[in-house]
Length: 445
Image (cartoon, rainbow, N blue to C red; front, side, top):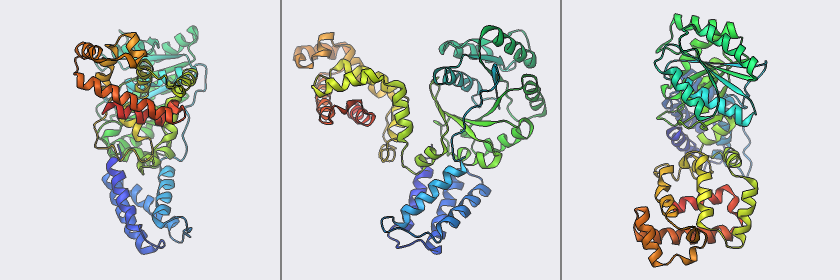
């Protein structure tokens, strides 16, 4: 997402490279390219024009410091305006009420059911809540079974009435069930339609009136671009929802919905979702997204993801082992499993400033490590913990057991030794996320 927009914005800023100061002429040329970049990303013309007008107003007359070039000043202004356009600050979810009721709405195929389960896991693990999922999509074939399957994967109960076709009754009964059984959060997954229609609007409005949710979230598919913004506006007129969720950000999307939806519906974008994994849900931070759009990375989010997965006590033990040069294949395998839990490797690497552009054309995914994992799993416990004994006959046996070649084994052992030296030379800094990412990337090649 945003790769094309990032490239176009970078080219626009190059117009100011070498300029001594910001002038009306060079600003106009730069903004012309910025407006084209936004329109190409499926941002509405009105939003793109207003955005460029705001940037122009702030850019003209800026006193450029000696240490700051005009291109850098314009980049900062665009970054700040992008963050403001997308909402400025992250908006938290409202969990008022006992139980707290969250109503999920959206078109069919937008990813409501998958998002409902992701939200349940997010609130369970990060907010300490006891959620109950409610299956109110009584029309789509297998919708109830899908929610039950997703609920079982994250160990969150699902309330459903398989024979009842009245979503208002189901939602009301679910809230009573939650109160009686100690659930403090109720997430109501409702039915969608292929398009906005009056029947759909009346039904979702009736459910909202019956359960009086503290939070109503509208889920839109980011791949639908500007249509997602128009659909959100139509729903907001009837539902007056509290926030927007953008799904499928890992798809072939230009990003226009993420940039302009806040300006059109005047409601915050609260969550973004990518992938099918239950953990693939992030709170939307406008300032961090602006940094990513402009190729500045998102190291804060990367560190937060690392802190969620890497145990502090285990990290301290690992640092001590690194300082003594005792890092083993067992340690490496454990670190690899934790790193993979953080998400897609390429997406994670792109959060490191300066890395995203360098790897955009490189094929990196979590399956890239399967051969390495097979090799390590084919070693004996003694071999994993003492690489020094890994002689020729042992390498031949491991190659046969893992379905790889002796050349691959030799390359892995050499790369492992190089990585161990690099991490040791960092002063035992192998617990640091950037060292891990750099080392893992080297091992993948």
